[in-house]
Length: 419
Image (tube, rainbow, N blue to C red; front, side):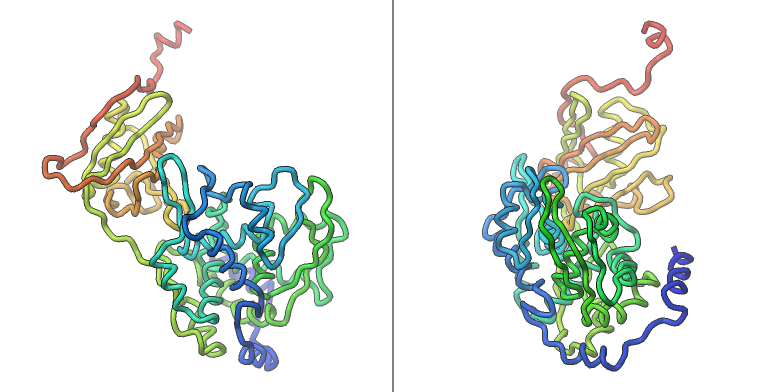
C-alpha cells in the first residue's frame, strides 16, 4: 500500500501542492451555515427529522431504507432527482445513499432489533452531542464521517482500503476547468463505479463541486450531464491532498472525531468541539445465543468473560463437528462496518481467543456469522437472543436446547459407494 501511495504522489505532483494566496483567503473568509458551502447541513437535518421519533424499518440484510420511504425522503431534499425506475432502491438515489452513509458512519443513527424487524433509529447520546455543535463543527465532523469513517460496507458494498478521500483525490484531476461532460448515459458509467454516485452526490452536498442533471430515460436511473469543480473544492482537496495520498487517515476500529481539526482549524477557528460517540464497554451477563445451520439449531448460554474461542468450540460440540479447521466470526458493528474475528492460528488479528463475549458490543437481536472450515464453508447463523443477569451457576458455556439433526460433517466412503 505504501508503494502505491508513493507512486501516486509522484504521479499527481512530484512536490506536494500548497495553497495559493487566493485559496487561503477563500478558506479564511468562508462562513459555514446550513446552506453554504453546500446544503449538507440542511439535508442531513432533514434525514434526522424524518427518523424522529421512532425510526424506520430497514432491510434485513444490509439494513438499507425501504422502497416505500425513498420517494418521500427524496422530495424533501435540496437536490431531489428523477430515476424513471419501476422499483428504485436506496442506491438509485445517490443523495439519500450518501446521507445514509453519514448517518451510520457518524454514529448518530444505528440499527436496533425489534423481534424480527431491523429498525434504523437515532442514538440519543450521540444526537445530543450533535445538537451542541455549531454549524462549522457539524460541517467538518460530517466531512470526517464521510472521508475517514465512511466505510462502503455500510452501503452493502465492498470496502475500498484507500477510503473516500483517496477516491475524491483520484477523481479531481479528471474534471477539467471547463467541467467534465457526459453527452451519453454510457459516459457516466466510469464515475458510477469509481468514486461511486453517492460520493459524487456528497461532493455536491459539501459544496465541492456542482452537478448538472439531465432528463432520465426509462429504466436507466439518475442522469448526470456534467460535473464542475468549485473553488472551495479545489482549495479543500488541495489542503487535504497530502493526507489522502499518503494514507494518513486510514480507517480505525474506534471512531474518534477531530482528525482533520489541526489542519483546518487555522482557517476555521470556530471548530473547537467534536461529535462524541459513546464507546460501549464490557457488558457483563450470561449471553444466550441461538445457533442455526440447515434445519437444526442449538441454544447456548455463555458467560460474558469467556472468549469467542470458547463459543466457537461449544458450537462445534453442539453440532458434533471436530476442531480440525480454521474459522471466522463476522458481524456488523453499530456503525454498519463488518468486524471479523478469526481463529487464533490465522494471520490477521483480532483473534477469537483474545476477544471476550462481553466486548463485542452486541445487543439482543444482533446476528453474527460463524464460518467454519474454509474448504467446506460451513456457515452457522449466530443470533444473540438475550443478555441475562450474571449467574454464578453458569461458569462455562452450556448447551441449553437441541433441535433437529446436525448436518454430517464428513461423508464416509461406505456412504459414497452407496450413492
